[in-house]
Image (cartoon, rainbow, N blue to C red; front, side, top):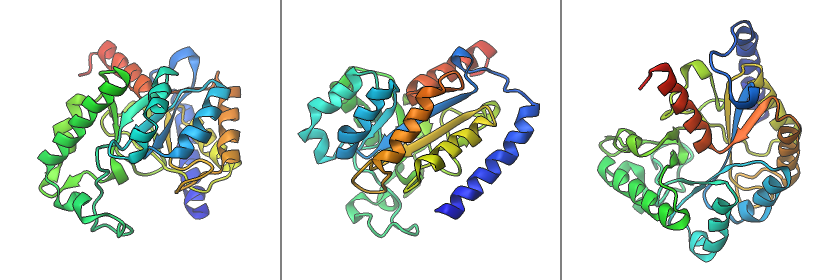
Length: 271
């Protein structure tokens, strides 16, 4: 993990040196140099118990991507509804979190939930049903989607083209989670899932992204508990940094950031 972090930071800083010579073509709101999206995947208890209170303390908005078949959605439904009422985003993370069981490290994938044996049409039907379920929870009609495991090749092809029109933005995964503003594509945004990093290491990632003046997506799973964890202290340190540097970093829901990008596209005549 530390080797990966160093590699990511080196590549970002190298790109940042070049980017500083060429200012971003489109500024973020309030003069911020960087848009920061904080995401929380998989409908986990620690997100309600630890991450949400921390976000509220620092006045930051984030996106919570719900696996809609999770028992924790039903058992704590009122709390997830409150997440939306507080101004955070409830995003779509599919019904059954299908990932490709044939890929390395995916031995945990259940046969009934294996993307390798699911057709693109089936995945599209399920993801769109997820939007309807989310509407019943928060009344919102516009959504963003995070691809489970970053896997989108179903049994008979890529399912994302079938669902793209239903989302203002899609996180596909991959790399450092940093996307250059000039080449940002709303339906193919990179995201990085940090695991076990310290607060200073998380801040270093954001600062490296800041050198480029672009956008960084960090997606957490467990915070102070559960799996693929980040400690509560490290998470708190990152939030405190973002909250104290609002002039540099625009931290908001992924949906709001993608809405802003879409508006800029319309203003520039892009479709």
